[in-house]
Image (cartoon, rainbow, N blue to C red; front, side):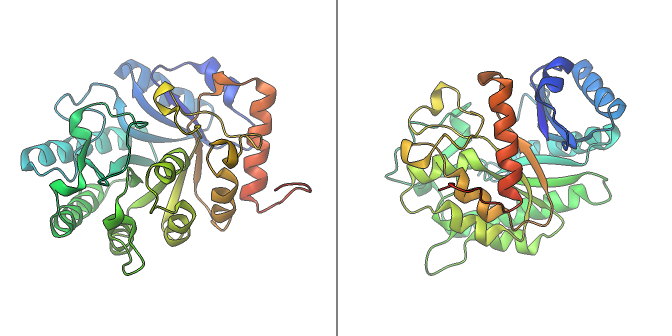
Length: 305
């Protein structure tokens, strides 16, 4: 899959589309008219489509780009779930297959780690882990997942949880399974999206986080994969660089090789290139797509490290 983000540009989609692609993920469009055009284009081209909240940017001013599903403020949570319900209704009307929302929101930042390479739209997007507790997060998280399950019941659109920044209470330690996996296990109707660029950034930031270990634990639940990379220390310059076998872990890039080998065990799922294709040549983009297809198929070309 490729993405339609910001403005609907059929020429951009055509440049990024390749044989074997099956759909588009649509997000943060400028207007409802752009949404109409994007879905009409997808239908005409027989493309499947998914939505990443929000479909139209600024359509939920009280919520912003990420519904605060686990905020301490009940009014904020209620506004977030109301916005998701409206997005689901709209996505269903357009014939979208899924709706992606981030969890946890606000993100919980591990104390003592350097989060300076991360971008946040507002101060409400993240809190220090010392401002909450495991029991509070468990209560808020289970309530959020229950509400999302109920909101989506009867809809033709699947709600997909995309992990945001995770702290030890989510991914677990040697002595515990982790809240995230318990939530996914107990709410099987919800999908789960892994974001390879964010996994890399978290590994760089949080010395206790092991992305491959998380992928192995989560593999049963993964329905969607967002593919992009970034060099450590440069994320605030924009990020979302197309992955490529030349961009190696030892040079500060994400361990895409390791991530994809783990994900090659997936039976099915939506693989979405959440990158800025305009940053590379068409030839290099072809190499990116061929490499990803090969890795997800479990191939290991001669000379590959």
